[in-house]
Image (cartoon, rainbow, N blue to C red; front, side, top):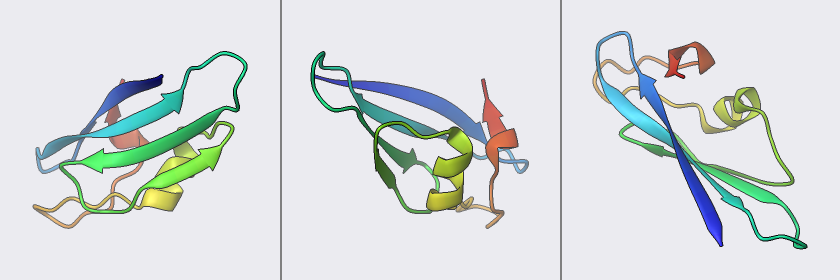
Amino acid sequence: MTMRTRFRLVCECGHEGNIILSENDQPYSRMWERYSLEGFDGGSYSVDGSASMDEAFSAMKPRCPKCHRLLTVKDLEL
């Protein structure tokens, strides 16, 4: 089964979206994670094992579609 977690991402201009983390939560199987963006421009990121949010941001390069600002981990609302 895949577990999904949403992390709220807010740009300085007020635009909001999410980073979606999908991860394998099956016992006795290999661990993997996939990161994708919802409401922001940029790529996705997949890794066998686990990654830090810094690694995911570096790979995805999330950009605001409204003001075109590049977002960082500091823009997460945890």
